Length: 153
Image (cartoon, rainbow, N blue to C red):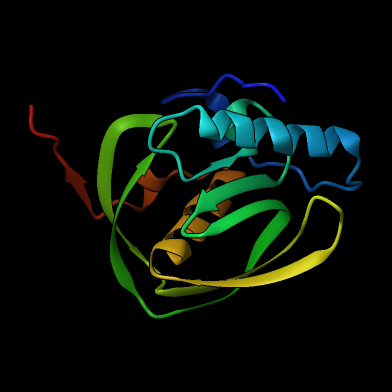
């Protein structure tokens, strides 16, 4: 496993859509492992999308709320309710905003071995699913901001 360099702020790769993974092989599993290692070596990280480490593939790793997930080609298949959230992002250090997210989200993905998984998350996990999957489409949490939260100096 290796720690990969995070991409920050105006890096154009954060605004690019990631490509679907056609074959899950050792290379894809290595990228997922590297993403997990990178996440674990970054402060305040809950999840990371592949383009945040410069890889334009539809991959997400989540280690949050009792979940450890390595997701390939995740997509939201159901969302309901609404909640106001406070969000930050590894790629935008020290920036926080309020957003409105679904209260409950169900995603469908493949795991690192190609097995289909369907997971439903509520509250914080629903927010996490939305935030990370938007990264894969070249969107960032700032796009969803309803209010900027100023940090006290």
